[in-house]
Length: 287
Ligand code: NAD
Image 1 (cartoon, rainbow, N blue to C red):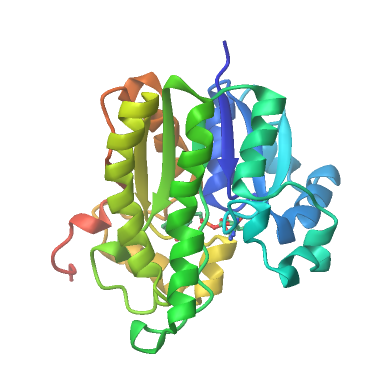
Image 2: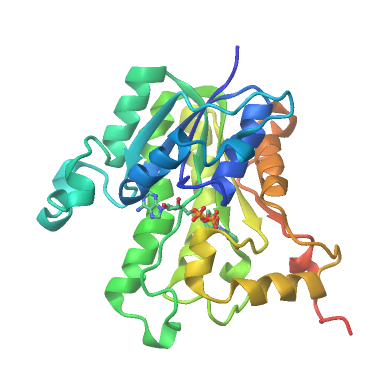
């Protein structure tokens, strides 16, 4: 039986979510996506127009396909949480059933149980502001979109997961080390995500017999990262200072994600796995 995966946080072919989809598709999984509502139209249009065909190519020459593509906004759990200005926003109004609980219901209806749950999303509206300047609203928004969203997904998708299934998310070492410029409470959000990974590993491990891990990735020039503004400097810094001197490719993270959701890692849970060319291990910048 091919495994079924649901991946939240894909809106183009540049980020980690897409690369994880690809690695899972290579391994024979059936993939469904949750795409942020405001980005859904352009994603679907680009997909239909063949804009992603080059990056959809699998090693056997076929193109990666998605069994279902759902609109999703991981900041809202049920329709009752959605404020009027969002519900009536024209980018949302044309879509239905995009809160986390409704997406879980749709997935259950369309696919039944799933084996793999991927959280590859983050958002911090004040990411360019240092903590000394971040507002309470901006800080809480970063945690809502980037941390609580994982908890909400495990709450709602956990009951749909087959025993032996696995959850994976993406984090960043700004949780442990000071990364000037990674602001808006995003460093706090990643610290919460990593702590929650451990607690969820225990709670969902006991309740659903699934594993929960997170990958701490090195810098990648994705759309989200470009919004932070200093990604090119981060990529250069990583190249200059890491034990392995090469640029990180998204598929390297995709392949580790495939390992972490496969039986090869059946005893690994609650773990933060670095996929960063080893940058996190350095204590002093080399000459
Ligand atoms: P990306 O832009 O490909 O992915 C982020 C996705 O989140 C986008 O598709 C966006 O539409 C979606 N999103 C934002 N708010 C959402 C919401 N409320 N509901 C649903 N979807 C929402 O960029 P990426 O860099 O691949 O990011 C994926 C993950 O990797 C994030 O957790 C990010 O923090 C993490 N990460 C990125 C880097 C990096 O350098 N790019 C490094 C370490 C960790």
